[in-house]
Every structure is written in structure tokens, then in C-alpha cells.
Image (cartoon, rainbow, N blue to C red; front, side, top):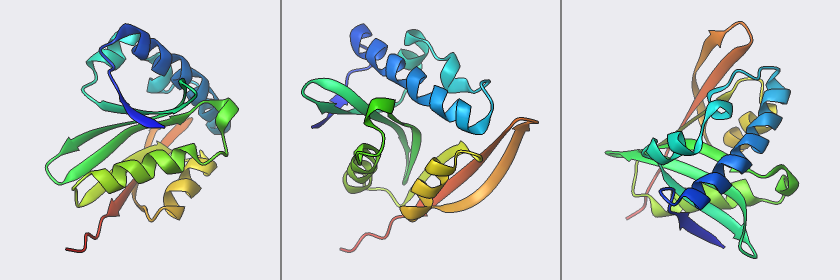
Length: 153
């Protein structure tokens, strides 16, 4: 079941942070860089980020999270994370599908580590196009994606 997460609730923020750290540690290993912002988050930074969080729950246990910010006709996906014990179960796809179906936007944007092949392939498979790649420093580059949503009336 997917439901909105009240990130202002400390227990919810702790649950999200704990899963985020596990999930982004896997990404850090894949890309060979541990100096990534999601690994520096705290309960307070999550609670102050201004994002809307949705969680995928299996028997009341949080297994995946997506967070977004909506600005005009654009949704910016800030986090799409799945607990490593639940990789390859379609949870990321369900979360992405929810956002795409519920948001009345024209464009979706997201970024990921350029060397994070599973994430890059996931976004490409879902119709996202690469719009730019930015080198942050020697060990880290980010790939930015965009997807134009065609709504039929």
C-alpha cells in the first residue's frame, strides 16, 4: 500500500532516513563515491526539505519512498529509494507510476549518479530523456533526466 508520509512526525522521518542511508549506501558503492548529499541528511534536514513524501508499505513496514516538489507544471523527484531487502520487487516502479498518474504536470525531472547504471536504465525505461550531465568533482557526476507527460483530454 502506498500512502503519504507525514515527514514532520519524528518517527516517520527516522524511518525514511534509516532506509535512505541504506539505499544510498548501495548507490555510493555502485558509483564509487561516498560523498553524496543523501548520506549527509539528518532527521532535521528531511523535516525541513519542503518535499512531499509517499511511502510503499508492506504490512505496515516501510519498503520504499518517493519524494517530490511540484513547481507550476513540473514535478521534481528528489528521492526514489527502496530498502535493499526489497530491490527488484517493482516498488520503485509503483511509486513512480503513482506520481505520474496523480500529478497534473507537463514535465517530470530527476537526477541520479551517472555511474548508477540500474537507476539510469530505470529512468530510460520509463521514458525519461537525458538532458545534461554535470561533473560535481572527480569521483562524481550526475545525469539529469526529463520526461514530458502527454495528457489526453
